[in-house]
Image 1 (cartoon, rainbow, N blue to C red):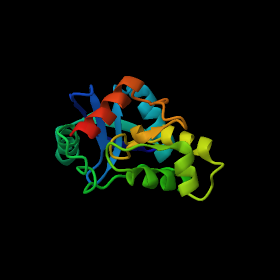
Image 2: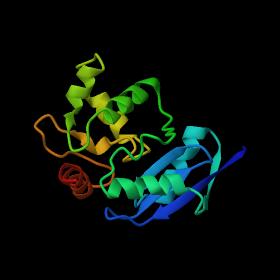
Image 3: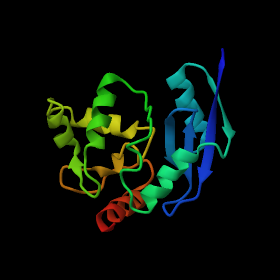
Length: 169
């Protein structure tokens, strides 16, 4: 089995430690306090080979986007090449998430209806949970049908912080 070498950067941020993974052209993963073993498994499954992460300071544009986001510049990820992988359905969900304005929320059902399949709210939820590039694909902007903050891989408190940060910037 071949091995893929990717770059990794740990970045302190007001929302906690951010782990950025990329290559020379693309953002491939952006996680919070992510256990590296889990992330390596996900990357191995995604790329079909062993993955090695090497710490680097070379992901400057990606780090700058995270810092800009934390300073209220919510379009900072728009100019970056983001490669989340995923199935065609997941890619459609993630594209819809990127259309939600900062500080706004949508329900899983609203996204399912927007994609032409109102009965697919659970599938939207699963796609949302598998988003490997938090912030760049703003999965924190999805809420339950009653508006309640629901599961978030980075934790509900972080989701609350992100939404409040976007609303007050």
